[in-house]
Length: 182
Image (cartoon, rainbow, N blue to C red; front, side, top):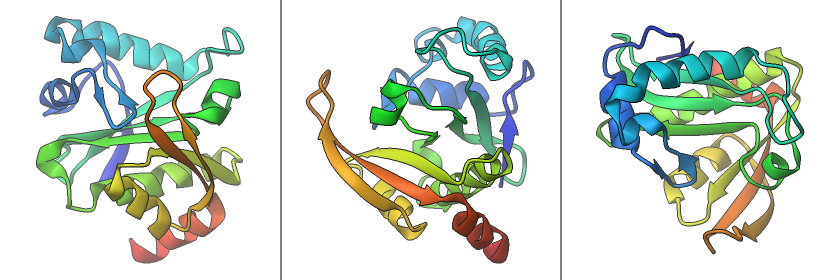
């Protein structure tokens, strides 16, 4: 498994993955491609741009999107990585968001992708990473806890009324764990 930064050339399985994601799931927002496959090229261009763009405002920060790829290079999920946080992301969203397509769940991709993402944050100087998880998402809660996540609090999303939890993970410890178990 590897994380590959999204470019204008999608890997095999990308369209199916984005279609499965649709408008989003468990707090991981969807893409325009989920509703209209013809928007794939436009969305890929956006991902490349947002990774390199300077902050355009306090609300619009750079974000690098990655494909979670299996050994064959097939796209099985997505990771969104943010080095900087604004007030909104500090409240909900955090440094890392990840999504694994339903057909590839329970195969270790979520935990592996989060470990790799934390290593990327560590390489960029982030020592502690914030990850937020909807309280009903028991699989993601287990992943974050298995990686040593320390819960700060539980909040309620004002838009959806859903509870979510905020966790901090030490990127040094997670990176060491990632290297020793790989």
